[in-house]
Every structure is written in C-alpha cells, then in structure tokens.
Image 1 (spheres, rainbow, N blue to C red):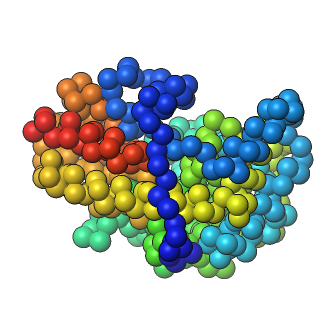
Image 2 (cartoon, rainbow, N blue to C red):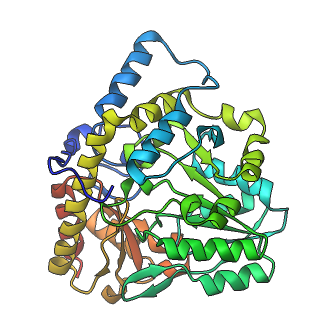
Length: 389
C-alpha cells in the first residue's frame, strides 16, 4: 500500500475516564494522576469486526481450546497480499502464543546452547531476555545513526557472524526508532548471513503500522537469499491492540526453513489463544482494513503533532518522526536530566514514558513515547514535561 484511501478517517480515542476502566498494564501500573504513555497499548475501541467476533464467542461460551485450523494461515496470507504485496504460502505458516514465544522457539532450533545471536540496539527490551531463554548469548551490533535516521550496521554484523555468531534477531520495522529497513539493507543482511551459514529471525510485529510511502519490505521477500536464511514472526496484536489474547504466526518461504517450524512440538501451537486466533482472523479480514487505515491516519497526525509540541515545549529534544509504529524515540540529553530522563518526568511531571536505557546503552538520555492516544492527551503530556525545563 503506497497511500491511504482518500476517505480514511482518523480514529477517535476513548475518553480518559473510560480508558481508566481498563484492567490492562497501561492503566493499572500507575495512579490516576499519571498520564501513561509507556507500554505499547493504544487508546482506541477495537475494530468493529473484532468486537463482533469476540462478542459472538462470549455469547456462545466459545472459550475452549484453539482448533488446528482456525483460519489464521489463509487470513494472514490474504492480509499480506493486500497490505504488503507479499505472497505467503499458507502451508508455511504456524501459530503460537506471541511474537517473543515464536522468536525463542525458532532460535532454539537454529542455534546451539552458548552460541551468540546478534541484536541491533537500541532495541525492544525483551530481545535481551529472549536470546538467553533460547540458550544463546546476546551480541550487540548497534544501529548506525546518521542524518537520515538509523540503519543496520552491515559491516558490524558481518564481523560478528565471521567471528562465530550464528543468528541475527532483527526488529523490522524497528522498535523503538520506527525505522523501516530498506530492501537493499535487508538483502545485504541476508547475503551476509548466508555467507556465514547463519540465520535471520525477523520480528515484524510493527509491519501493519508502516506509514504509506515508507515501503515496508517483508524480510523473506528481500531476496532469494533472505528466503533461504529467514524466519518471520508476525502478529495482529500491535496494530489491533490484541496483545492480551495471545496469537502470533511464524512464517517461512523456504522448504528447509518450513521443515524447521513444522518440527516444533505441538505444544508450541497449543499456546495460541482461541480468542487471539478469532481476533486475528477478524483483523486480517478486509472488513478491518478501513479501521487500520484510520489508525494510520491518527498516528500520522500524532507523530507530526509531537514534532510541533517538542519544538514548542522542549526545544532541545531531538526527534525523527517514525516511519512505522506508534512509538516515538526522543533524545532528551540536552535537557540535562541524566541517563534516564523518564524517572524525573514520572516523578515531577506525572507522565509515564519508557526509559531509554532499557533499550540498550544507546538509549541513555532517551525516552520512548507512546503516541497511540488522543491529541489532547499527547498535548497535555508534553506540556507537563515542558514545565520541567
């Protein structure tokens, strides 16, 4: 998809008083005087097709075990074709509970205990736990930062793999920077991995949240080599706010890689939540496309609003609008608030943000801001922070 439909209508966030009735992490960690702009949950009502499906299930008492074929494979294949131009073979798709589960299960089968796995910080904090959970050791190859944003350090990854690292855990699109890796960069990564007999596991949970024109490239489509060395782990959970329902998909594009996923124990697939499968099928259906377009329009408005607000209230902040996702990576080192500005912001401004150091040492002096909220909430949050300067 290169452009939003001209009639795409931004979503309207639920009122704060309604959101505070939720029981999820975003609304239960801090007291009501704190504006929570941290964990990756959004503040909108569910897509109508998802609500209808879940309401029907509750009315029926349909809360049993997830069936072997809940429609996920074909549903995701259709979604990938419409949204990304990606032809996915449904036979090469298998489900599990969530993306990190999928990452760990794949890594367990492509690396040996004690092997090193490359990650590219600043990066999603659970990566630092997923690699050891798979029995491996984290090897950090930080993103390169230039005037045009962040890019993969292919030379650094090449050196790491040449020195014995056995896999790369890729975040694509990247969290927290919102970077959409180019086809050239992904193809280069695949070539390097194949040269060293290594694998790439690509977490693509933020893919549906790529802004039109940013050009998301599924790793498995970047080149023939990418198909041979790659595994993708995807989910509707981030875009459609379904994290608590537990459903993710492991996708391959090569017979040998598919054999690896098919060889996983049945229990890996049993971890898929029934409500997660139902909701994901509804999310992947064309009936939910207009809702997703509206979400993208909302995020686009908010990422631009954040730039204006920072310029007005925190003029020393460094911020590049994310090309994907509803998470903004902001450099506050000029404010002089130390390695973890989020601590002072929480204490004195009563705004909860993700601490930059949780993403790696490259995150010192940074914060991650969740912009999947109403413009009014975002405006109040930045205004509160601005009073600290």
